[in-house]
Length: 210
Image (cartoon, rainbow, N blue to C red; front, side, top):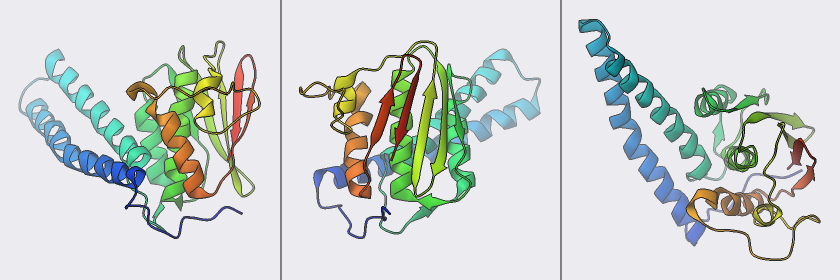
């Protein structure tokens, strides 16, 4: 059974990048929350206008994304855990109103390192569901299963090669641009958790187990 990391990796480049991610998200969440509170006060003081409603919605979306990114791209200290309710809220907030929906079905709290891995894999599946679809995350014994279903998929093997060498993947480097960095980070998170990835790619579905 995979275990949570027992050694802190802050000394390496990936650990330093995670600390930077945590710092950025931490420093952004307070001003975004202040904007939301200010907009609520404006709405209470006067009849809400479409402009105020737009600002409020944008602030809520920004807050939800930062909370999600703080887990996905932030530091995961050894032994640290995240409650199931916090993870459900983070996933629901990030995917709310988008073309892709996500259902977090893990009933218990899990280690932060595992949570980081699963959220990075959610981002990978979101990339594959470029035209929208549905994703579910559920426990599978001592592993986790992520299932993505859509009418049309963008399953690029080279990208998934960065996560794990799959039989379907050609032997050339995966892309490493900013829009796709979650694939490379998922590979690092997979190794940090001591987990192995198994994947099945179909015409309308992708199933991952870690």
